[in-house]
Length: 364
Image (cartoon, rainbow, N blue to C red; front, side, top):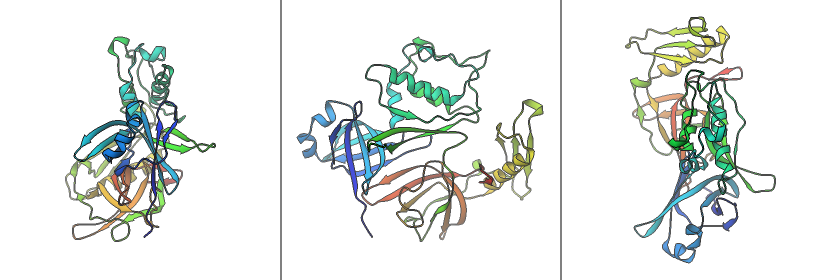
């Protein structure tokens, strides 16, 4: 098996000035998450820290991660502390910066109050406000997504009084808590000039896509026996679909199956769907997904032609096949995050039931 080549490039967070071309991090673990900043963890030998004290004390720093000479990710480093015989290093993705910034002017300097506002706008406003302050622009590009979801009403607008000094991260959190909200994750691209572009990937109705080109299976690329969870909290044999429209006039559908188990109900809300046949199909797909009893919440995989390393994205629906003495499962699951372990080139992938979603003419 060919060993992957990992490289950790250190840069100034504010200016992106190159500080070190290959930091000797060890025991590195990193990964993104759905609607979160993700995380980075590693250790450094004391000798390197003593020889390069200014790298971590004179300025805020960012690590860019390459696998086999290809840029894969980036994280802001927040903490360096002695831990045993090494220094523990901790970081997080670009959204973590908003945990350290507050609204000092109120309503993001006049961008609010928010009445019937798209939550995508709220997310972009938080980033725009952050970069307007001196030494506050970390050059994050936020995707130009939009959604039909609404925040605030004429009677109860969403407003941020200046005296509350709300964290900008809380503004973003509000945007992804409303019904039918958009989704985001962090990332990094390589620009035309070869330099990294820091990204907040924003999408509606959701991130990711159904992946027919990759799969995870025991005996193939799953390297540890996964735990199969039987959870009635996520089980439904009755799904009610609510589509476009208001109140009693909204498009509605129902898919009910008597399977001998206790009747458990859930509601699928899709205000973007006005076609009755499509809502019927989505509701049935949701019921099929939620009626599956026995799910895999986490798997550990290796690089394999069935799913090359990091060929997946946050939000993707992937086929997961588990055959062991505890379970016999072949189902679609959604990737909501993962942790890369560079020492072993393995990937701990967090999953949740796929539910239902329309990919063009295909219902997931």
